[in-house]
Image (cartoon, rainbow, N blue to C red; front, side):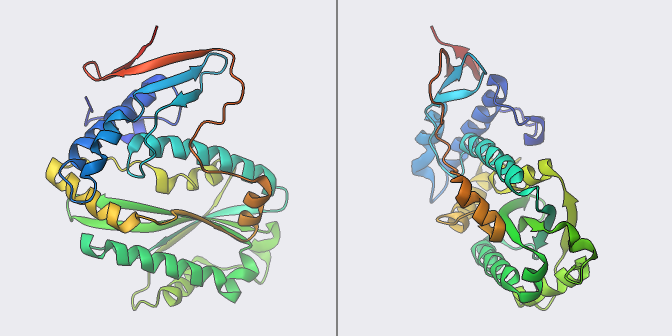
Length: 293
């Protein structure tokens, strides 16, 4: 089953069968915790059944058929959606890189207790809309891709919701009068949040790979090293805080580019014609995929 010594960061971003088996094991572990939740217990069977069948194209070894459950907190479906978003982001980067360069901006608020998580996410989303609509910001920042990430500290039992933002700026931005220092953005972010403390903000340049990575943060499976009871509690609060929300949101030139490219974040495979498929089924007793037929 799931090996606690192996972290999500060790799983890799590939689509190979061994990586998929690791995510499947993590989905099983999540399902076991879900059965003790108040809001997700009825999803347990869906997560257990998720990804029990995978069809790989013989030509390029990509998944072209599967029985994914599409649940937001399913690690396997989060993994699949992150791959889809990664591909979308590469296309956006190619579309925009002639005219823009990109910044990675992390917008934070103070850590919060579980009971305040939903309100804190509301605060982040409302604050970010206000920031992106600020006249000073719009003069320098021409587009944003906003991704919510929520982490959990099992020592303090606090959540850390924050936003990873891809910011498109003109190449001349850094020497223009519209350039915003980190301190300037911190002050504008504080005004947008309407809080008394000065929140932390981190800004750095990013390349094409950074462009793709940012869009994956909110879809990264939460690898929780917790007791079943605490795991269930965390899943309940995450579900209540994230239900019905758009975790990825684009603005300005990034939104326009996504519309031109007609990008979809659907995790259903867009395989087209495939000449030959190798099928695998998940063996629960061995905790691995075995080739069918």
